[in-house]
Length: 287
Image (cartoon, rainbow, N blue to C red; front, side, top):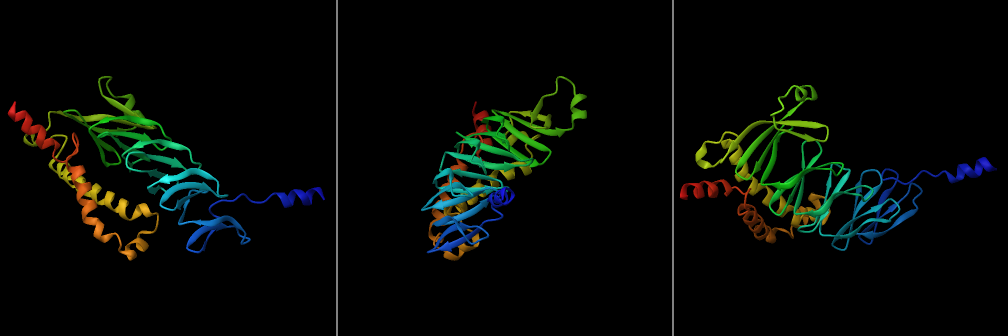
């Protein structure tokens, strides 16, 4: 009898793989494999996150619940984006943060944007300055840099004031043999060395670290984020599959106006906008 009782009590814990989404009156909930309701159909969207959580949309706000319907993050955010299937970015205009499937905050909700980088790192943006966080929530570079991007998994380019630095990834063996005067940066289990540095870069300097291709990427970077931010505002922030949103077509009249605003904001951004180098060069020539 004791063995039987124990066997009856050892039910498998609920996960995203042993629960199914059901719908009722255009709302969504969760059922187990016995067709029993675990979470009532009360959400406009339910999106899997990892093995133990669900991104939810209640009215027009997004949050996070566990597999039994308990709130991990209250639904108070206008925008949501699942990253690498195991993290979720939630936020409004200036309070984006990154959460794991337990609701733990990995990147504090205080950034204007959070974007993935190579090596499971994240680029953060706040007050027109860039920084980098790891996927464990460790701040690798504080938000004090004018521009950061990784053209390849092994190179990183950083602008600080009037200096451009190019960093190259090195192995531990290479790191041990570098001269002490070499500038090094440690990020998680990765090490980078400065492979090039240029001071007072500008349109008339010919670009050593910042090549013509890089500068073209900067100009395009004002277009691409504007487009992506517009898509996020009008479509992906609705928490649905892109195809279903496209079919509704209600976003089309708003697109040019939202896009123009986003593009202008990116264009005039001080320090790192595509016109920043031109402005700096003109100032130097007027001195």
